[in-house]
Amino acid sequence: MSKKHVMVFNRLPEELVERLRQHFTVEVIPFSANIDLFAASAAKAQGLIGASRKLGEQELEMATTLEAIASVSVGYDSYDVDYLTERGILLTNTPDVLTDTTADLGFTLLMSAARRVPELDAFVKAGLWRKGVGEEHFGTDIHGRTLGIVGAGRIGAAIAKRGHFGFDMPIIYTANSAKPELEEQMDAQRRELDDLLCEADFVCLVVPLSAATEGLIGARELGLMKSSAILINLARGPVIDEPALIEALRSGQIRGAGLDVYTREPLDASPLFELPNVVTLPHIGSATHETRFAMAERAVDNLIAALTGERPSDLVNPAALDHR
Ligand code: 8YV
Image: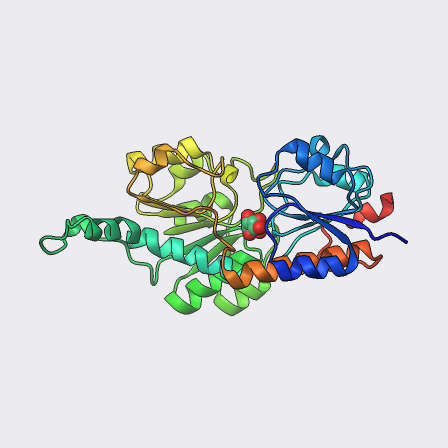
């Protein structure tokens, strides 16, 4: 029997490509491959592995032999899951292995925005530190302030843990269902979104992007936040109405923001760049050597399972099995 064909559509460590080669014929296409190259290569494939590419009907129409896609990400908003399910194509993601690293970055953003780290670093390096610092350089306290987690899933819980045990922060959260573990371990309290926005000193967005969460934070919601509050977005750009956020940061409606994600990525120009009270990172939530390797490894395991007749451990759309 001839080997199945796998297409790797973004960077994967060489030793993991080698592992795939033990099972499959592997083709690696460049990360920047255009749609024609992608479609031509996908047309031969039973399996795809990669991330950061929008994949729906238009991109996969020619991929008539496709059986599985292993995404190297926990979020799967860039895939048309209903379409994949209908076609019996399995989709897998990489939960757990990135939880702590992404929570670390959430806290990094929170602290950087609160203590104005990038702004004051630039101030020192520009040679502007000529006398002592004054009120114009002051930040805001972190310890003991209320941390609001919007979407207390795995990453949200890991951020709450850092805030509660490390910084003595009272924790409030929103979630589709109550989280008894969080409530028992750190006395976290569940709130409606509007109440959380009114109460929290730091609002941290960690919801998956879906029709229900697109535009979740707009002008009205920003208006509910304290003028001293800081908003952190680790989720996906479209969860926030970006022009409304820019306006809120400009007018002092909220004190600051820490952003890892944007409506458009990569982001090479934006009014955000003019604002000193926003910390901007280039979508690096999971981007450490260790975690990106672990994610890639987990995706490879998932793909091998999916293409060798086993049930992958991180199957996003089990209903696809009924359409095969
Ligand atoms: C990266 C992420 O976007 O896992 C996710 O959902 O947002 C990130 O880890 C990327 O997909 C990693 O390959």
